[in-house]
Structures are given as C-alpha cells and as structure tokens.
Image (tube, rainbow, N blue to C red):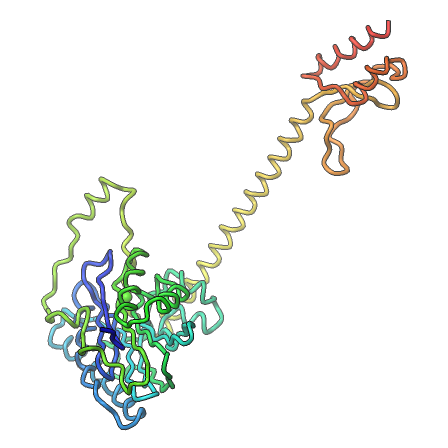
Length: 412
Ligand code: CA
C-alpha cells in the first residue's frame, strides 16, 4: 500500500545513540535534531516532538496553524527548561525543530536550528528554510561562499536552538503555497550534510512512494558513511486534503521511553584500538553544539576564520614557491644534461664538433660549436657529406674527436 507521508530515522554508522526524532501524522510533520553530550540530545529532541505532536489536528485557516505551531515550539522550549531544572545533569541540552502543518493547499512552516525543509517540484529541489548556523552568518555577510560553508570546520556550530538557554528563542515561521505533485522533505543534517541536493532530487524521482523515498534517502546517507544520526520525513501532496501517514508515527529518540539517567561515556575500547590499528582509527565527527549568540563569541569566531584564511594563504604561497623552484631546478638539470652531449655537423661549410643536442626549444638552439675541424665539407665524398650534414651523434667528446679523425683519414 502506498502512503502519502512517512518518517524514518537511523542512528548512523558512528554515533552510539540516536539524538534525532521525527514525526509523520495526518496534518503535522516534524524533524528534531538533539544535542547535549552523552545524555541530553535524545531527551531534548524527544521532549520537543512529544510536546509539539498535539498540533496534529485540522485547522480552519493556515494562519491559525502557523500560530499554533509557533506556540507549540515555545511550549517545547519551556518544557526543555523545566526538564533541565528538574534534572540538572541535562544542563546544556538543546534541539533543532523544523516542522510543517498542512492546511489544504497551504503549509505553515516553523523552524529553528539547522535541520531543513525542502520543496521538490518538477524534479527540482529547493531549500526553503535557512540554517541558523555560524557559517550561514558568514555566507550572508559575504565572508565565505555556500561551497566553503559546506566544508567549514565550524559548520556544526548553531546560533539558535530550543533548550534551556533562551526563554524566548527566535523562531522562523512562514506560510507557503503547495500544489499536487509537490513533495516536501524534512531532514536532519545527517542527510543534508552528506548527500548532495542533486542526489536527493534524483532519489525523489526514482522513489514515488513516500516510505520508499524515506528508505532510499536513509540508505544513501548510510552509503556515504553516515557519521551522524539521520532522520527523514517525506510529505506528498496530491488532490487529497491531507497527507496522512497510514498511522501517526514517531521515530528516533521520540519512539523510545525517555531515560533521564546520565549514561557512562563509552571510552574503553578506543585507546587500545587506536594503538593496534593506528591507520584504521575512525575520526569521530565533532559533536554538534550550540553557542549562545553573543557579540564577543561572534567576534572570536570571525577572528578565528580570518586567521585560518591567512594560514591557508601562507600555505599556498609556500607551495607555489616550492613548485616554481622544482620547475627551475628541472630546467637547469635538463639544460646541463644537453650540454654533456656532443655531435658532429656542419658550421660555415666546415665540419665541426657541436656541444649540446640537435633539437632546440622554439627559436633557441641547445647547441653551440665546440671545435672547428678545418675540414671543408666540399672535400668529403657525397655520401659522407650527406651523413655529416644530417649530423652524427657522438657518445662523448673523445668519440666526437675520433669521428673527426676518421673523416680526416677519408680525405687522404
Ligand atoms: Ca545532527
């Protein structure tokens, strides 16, 4: 049976627990990507999804849906702060949330963090949300390009999330039109950070059923190594008034019972593994983290970015000088080799020994007369003259001189 919407979540290939959550219902669709040490991220995304899920109901207008969604995200933020107050070991936990409520041919969107909402229309994928990340700031202010942002070492630093930091976080909301044939993709950065938009668009063409598309997108992230948790929700728009999943489904951390007890960090195997197989050691990606938006912090990050650019420029300059030195060295060595060669030929009608090689570089000859023999070419037999005019290679200078002597003998 085909479904109009579906959600899926996978822990990935590197992380030990899934801190993402997702929801696909009748009217509401959400992804949340939690963060906060070894206990907290999963709790944060699960609390957020569970406190937003009640918005999965019909609305008279899309504006009403937008207001309800924004209010639900703020409630979730309050729930997170309350949980931290009750369980101080969760301090610092936070979560992204990107969600949509469908009201007929319109969608209300709400978004905070770096999970993403894309629209796929006529085979083309368009990112609708804007990441609340440090690197997006740098892109917006023209300091770096989107391509540089995608590989920037600070790309996982978030400027805004739901959590216990800000009691009134800034949430982006928006109302957009939709039409039959549109597909809406909600995903955590475990997909968007590792699978290109082009590939995502292709997979959405190939897999027309929502749950097949979700499975294919998660598989693609796993094929790319899936260093992060990956969560995907696909919502298809047809003539029906809603895009119901067969039944409302929660995935990822939200699908598990909440555990508030801090887990012991798993470190025991890493050191021996590293010692036994130093080359096979896996680099664990830098954990996502949230940095409060302060002027001082921004200045520090921007200064760090500038230092990195200077370092890169210096590395480039040294590289260029080295390459230039190698090229010059090779040319000098090549020229010196040509000057160790000798041949016999004709200069001004006389047989002569040349130092160098017959070939030149463009208009520049690589040979010069080393010794004139005093033998007139006209005195040679026609056959010998032809050979001399075509030049005779010598192994070295003594060989060249002995060729001259043989020619002299021929004359007598
Ligand atoms: Ca993530």
